Image 1 (cartoon, rainbow, N blue to C red):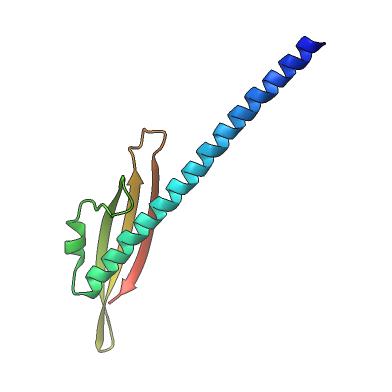
Image 2 (image 1 turned 60 degrees about the vertical axis):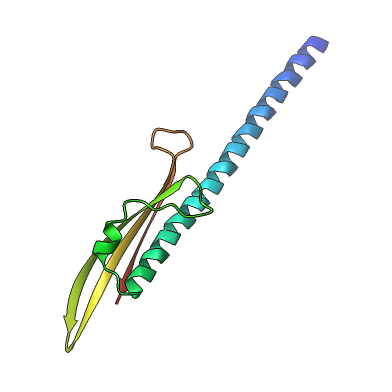
Length: 122
């Protein structure tokens, strides 16, 4: 009887250790996902600031990847396109900005990526 109780307690202990490791891994992945989102958002906001100060999509697309301070290991790639529309006597430019933030490489277990897209009128 004592052997049976020890085996059951050992199996329960092993299960609890495995469950704890899985929960830690899940919380780390959630944190990295949030950091990737913030890096992509920083890329979008940087792009909007560049356009608001007279920049163009050509300027943004020449940036191959950016690294932001405080987001170590994340790279952000910006893709921008623009179209010009004429309405009555007014011409407006519509910019479509896409930011892809990545951590690690695609084949790694800790790879995470977030992509944000926005449109602005200038």
